[in-house]
Image (cartoon, rainbow, N blue to C red):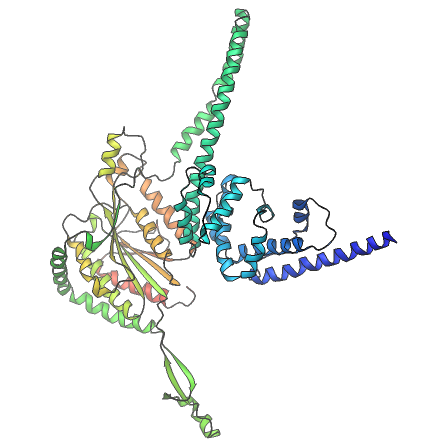
Amino acid sequence: MNFIRGALGEILFKKQKKDLFNNQQIVANSISKNKLQNLSEEKKIEKNDKIDLTEITKDLFYKVRSIYDFKALNERYKNKKIYNFYCPTEEYKKKLFDIICAGRFLRLGFEEFVGCKKNIKKNINNPNIFFDFTLDKKSAFLLKTIISIFEGKNIDSKKLDFFFPELNINDLVELNKLILSEELYFIKANEIIKKIKIISEEESSNNLKNDDQIKSKDNKSKKEELKKIPLTEKINKKQKSKPTEVDPENKILKKKDVIDEKYKIYTKEFDLSLNAKNLASKAELNFLRKKFENEYFENKRLINKLAKKLERLFSSLNINSWKFDQDEGYIDPTRLANLVANSGNLQIFKSKNENTEKNTIVSLLLDNSGSMRGKPIITSAITTEIITKVLEKCKVNIEILGFTTREWKGGMSKKKWESTGKVDSPGRLNDLLHIIYKDADVTWNNCKNNLGLILKDGLLKENIDGEAVKWAYKRLLNRKERKKILIVISDGAPVDDSTLSHNSPDILDNHLKETVNIIQQTKSIKLVAIGIGHDVSKYYKNAFVIEDAENLGDVIIDNLMKFLGSKNN
């Protein structure tokens, strides 16, 4: 009789357990927007519990829910293309990346799904059930710390310092600020992982020191033993050990690593990113603005030509629509037949539905190098101003940025390098100067004097394009607008004499290509490059060449009409 009861109980338990997993799979599919594939977590739960499950207990119920909820939130808030692009390949780093990644989707999920938060919180002290790998004490503590910081709770700073002595709390706080941008969050995550990796290497080096101490003790005892061994036996042992002392393949690999080294920056200590108003006095900016306006009058033909094109752009961006079947407003001729058929039907009017939402941002990045001096930079600035005024009327946010260096042939960065021993292949050796002529949140009337700065003597120097494009890209990623367009206006390849003189000759070229490739692969921003007198297609996929700077406006407007008019962007 007991045997029959036990058999029936086991059958009932299996059915209940199957129903529990099936029901949770349905819920998880809904939360993950049907991205979640069928999971088989039953074995995982039994393995973690290390007990023979015979009934659906409350603990098991919440455990199953929490696992499915965790997986569903991961799928809901993770773009696989972006994740795969930024996820490290090394196993150790990948695990840390997944833990930090979990902090993001849990933070977003806890806000949107209170039920998921309750389920996951009940099992957060057993985080191994959520991951496909085992978390040690350090990793588990890191996950809990990230969640606590994201929820605004106090953390155990002593414990954090113990496990991760070189990890700053501000790094984790910074992650929380980047929560809405998956790409920026992952970039910051990799910066944190580098710090943690350094720590792990230091720990391993400490272990090596301890091993060396043990080995040195063993060596002492061996030396004492060797004293007792005859001289001929010592010589034979030395001869046998000689071939293993030198490994030529390792030496070749080390040299290859040095050659394939990625883009480096000797120091960022002297780099500046400033608003244009901080680079000249108010009186000087007023003077430069008047000088700039004189150039305006000398280019009336260009301005009139652009104005006609901009009328078409304005029309294409006129996103007002009509509300039909209204009780009042403008008479809709297409509804008059309804009135004739039914005199009681008075909904024959239409009213304008004006869209006031700013959902697009355009960033113009101007090359401020010395080679742009004269007509190219003046035409670029005039075109930029005209387009800015029109886009503002079209409720499109626009920002204007510029990039150059603080000095010719290296500045303080190079002096520091020279004073500290001149290491080989130091990386970028000049001080950057990134200029904000117009912030996207500032109206043109409040900053129009800034653009006159392009006429300031001594401003235009050298150009390090890769870092400038990355800077403009990061600024766009921080914006909430749905459509994001970055237009780079340059007159050729990146050039910085001090950097190219002491590194590989293609260091700046390769970095620009690498940066542009990353942006183009993510597809979160439309990137266009315009080369003035030079072909820039070897760097940019969407590239245009104009032989005369006067054609700049045509190319920019044509591309804006193309991108802004598309609903799928």
